[in-house]
Image (cartoon, rainbow, N blue to C red; front, side):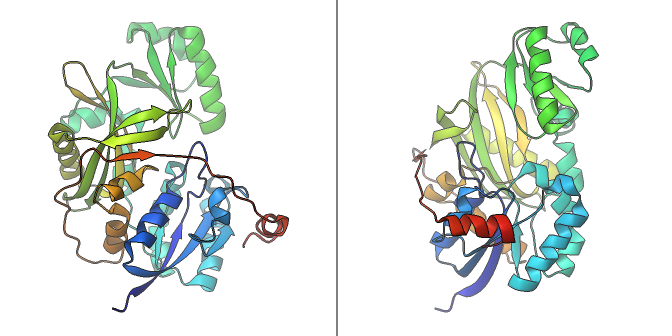
Length: 348
């Protein structure tokens, strides 16, 4: 059987204690055996481990951070495209998605396909807009409020009871038990991710998650619920188990149907003692634990690639409950010349 040639570009090669989804996405597609695959890695830092995983990534180019402007990023992508003839690009970081979504037409002109949320979908599910999202789509969400300066902190007691969650617009979340802790977390988060910083009602319960893929027409191509079994000090899952929970799947389908979600997503949920589900975050891309979904029978990265290529994809109808993933560390030994190549030449 002749496999279709696929030249795939991915970001998110930082497979560290705060792992990006890039490596598990590549692994999922490569192990499917459906494509004659060449992988082009797009790295922001020179020590992202995926750069040196030669068995998974064929070529790596360093790219400028989106904060340097979409012009610089797209100029670099255009150069890379001349060398590689990339067919599909899967961005894997929240902070870069806005730039890649806005550049969708330019990417198409270059011959690069993506399958990403629309700007409206991306903006609507922001943590700062979660209250309005919950009302519009009829889902439970914690009360939230965006803060743009320290003076607003003293007024929080009018609307919230402590503890509260303090969250960055892209990443990071901390529990604060008083105003002093809110101020400390506000300063830390705003310095790293900018404003606004979001204050969110603290909902007591068990955190559960769903990975899902929407086709942009309101249909759920796949969805797998999971509960974290082991959590790092950064709040990242280092182990998790697939769940038999129809309510989580129904909620996911409701959100995808209502928003007509296009692309991958992760729902972060709290299940209360009364068995109510609260949506605390909607991440607009494939999460780093995607390989668990693949192991449970739903290869969502392969389905996403097919959607990007314009192919029809049948929804997954089942997955295996009780599948567990356990993440681990692995020391790689690399040569200085490889590190110098990506540092000095910007490619390897």
